Image (tube, rainbow, N blue to C red; front, side, top):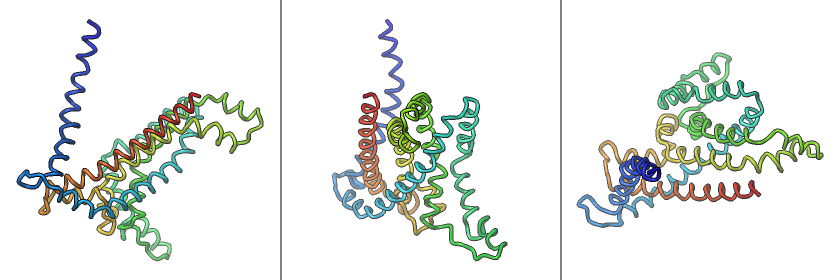
Length: 273
């Protein structure tokens, strides 16, 4: 009877996966390899190959944003994990607080800060300095990605680092290892699963973003997410071409997740050893 109940509880999840994951993926594949009349064709896939430079630029900016998130989040997460429990809870709340605000509103805020007549240029003009071109640049896109996605890097790192026993660090110090040796031989290997999880959680949404690039990057920083949005919306609506481009992005995301998943498995096995 217990086994039967356990089996029944899995059915809602299976139905959810079929309706909102498997079926949409199958529809994307179907429309990518058919034309408007439903006949099989490879023209959509061949056309999507023309957008590889855009995809490469998206991967580059997403990788850059992921790197910045890792560099900023790693020391923060480590320091946070060494605080008292009450302060850890407070810091966790502060990290999650911006996430309670709508994603679009957060990006609008940065647009107001970076635009030509925004907060930063107003301050620069007030102190006698020439205004800077901040909006509609690759740097603005990366900044928007880092701001919006850095909590997804901090939290996995923090959850792993809290499991590192302080006695291990003390033992390393007692055995004569300095700060950098302890970090390289103890902290870094034990925190690798958190790094892999954080990189995956930041890179995947960053490479497919379109709101941030559209609002902060302008037409000069056209990413693959913007292209897919245009293909599915407006006068240029083309369901088949949009599905083919989405399939191209999907393949990149799946390859990335497979690589990171492999690294995470290997790191976990090494940590156990």
